[in-house]
Image (cartoon, rainbow over all chains, first blue to last red; front, side, top):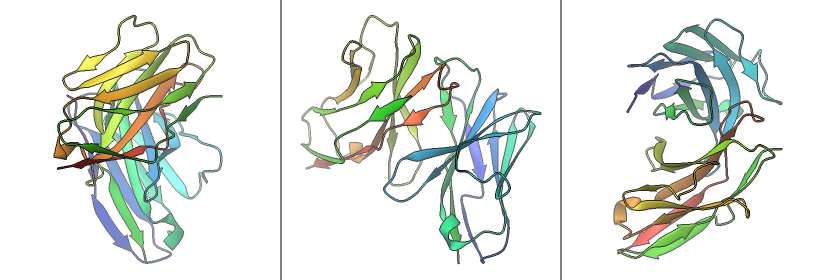
Length: 117
Length: 115
């Protein structure tokens, strides 16, 4: 199957700093990339959808100025958590698809665990 | 509105027995896809099985099968011959046109396999 990587896998930062998380599709060109957030023992909550070369579409309640998404190419999307606070500590997962239909498999990255002190 | 409901927060099963994880969904679309994912403690999301809304037969993938009852809007996952390595969180998910092809997830069911 297709491979999606995330970097870093784990990051600890101080409150007030910004953190960038990279998501790459390694062996395919991703039509669309998604960013999810998962709190402990909870489900995945979609944060935003991004298509290469266009602005990300954020879900209701997600602050676009706080969670900056840049989809620079068909294989790379980045999520920057700006001025991180302890409540931003979470597991962030990206995923990528090769098409837009409901039949296209979604490939998930391994996730990034963010801890804000 | 698109919605996925998993009513079992936790399930126990004896090793080598079969277990059914429940999932119901709500959508007004005629065309949609239903997915099951496994999430072990490492956090990675592992794709298990897919069912298309127009598929007439229930999907099967090895020990996994999907009991698709379209009229009842249910898509239960059946795991046969459970193994200790099956202990994990399981998520039911859906993608559809009305949902903008975004995948929405249920709350998940944590499965514990007992030796």
